[in-house]
Image 1 (spheres, rainbow, N blue to C red):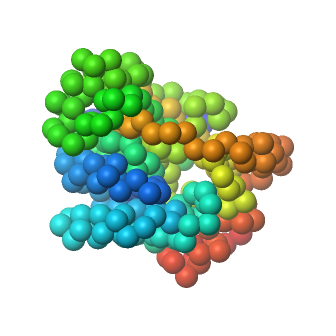
Image 2: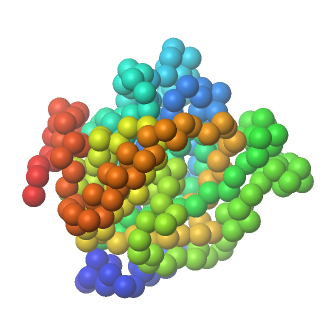
Length: 294
C-alpha cells in the first residue's frame, strides 16, 4: 500500500541515508536573460551533496551569453546537461518548461528558477522527499537587493551569514535547514510557486504538462497544481528541507495576470486534469512522445 492510497496522510519520514530505489532526479532550471545569476545557480548545482542525474535549462529566448554559460558549465559536469531554448516572443514560460520536460529522462523532476540559489542539500532533500502519488511544494528565502550582489558567488555558509548580518534575508522559516522537515498535506493552491516544485514525470505526462495558453507572468504553476489535484495527485508542503534563496530582481510585468486568472478559474471549475495545449505538442522530444490523452 503506498502514499497515494492514504490521501490524508503525508508519507512517512525518510531515514538518515539514501532511500533504497530512490528515483532518478532531473533538475529543470528556468531562465531568461540573467546569465550572471544563472551562472551562480549552476555553480550551486555543482556543489550539491547529491547531484542530479540530469539538468535541463529551460530558456525563454536568452542570447548568446546564456548559451555560452550553459555550454561551458555543462562540459565540466559528470551528468547530462541540456539546453531547451525557444525564440523570444514574450513571456512563454509554460511552453519552454514543456520543451524541457519533453527532453527529460529522469523519474522525478524538480523545478528551480534561474535566479534562485539552491541549498547544498537541495537535491538530496528532494530525492528523499519523493513519494508516489504526491508532488512537493518547497519554499524559499528572499535575498534583498544589496545582498543579492554577492549571494551565490562564494561559499554558501559565508554568503548566507553575510546576507543575514546585512538584514538582507527574508523568510525566517526557510533560511536554515532543519534536522527533520515539517511536512503536511495542503489542499488548495495558496503558496504554489514554480521556483521550488517537484513532480513525478509520469504525473506530468498524465495531465499533459504545463498549459501553454498561459503567456505573460503568473498563475501557470497554480493551474498545473489544480490539474494534478484533479488527477488524484496530492500536494505535500515542506518546510525546513529543500531550501532555496531567491535573488532580488525587478518584477515582471503583470499585464496578462487578469487573463491568466481566467484560465486558472476555468481549471478550478472544470475539474479536468488534461489541458488541450500542452506537453503533447512536443511529442518528438522524448517524454511528450508518450503523452496521450486519457
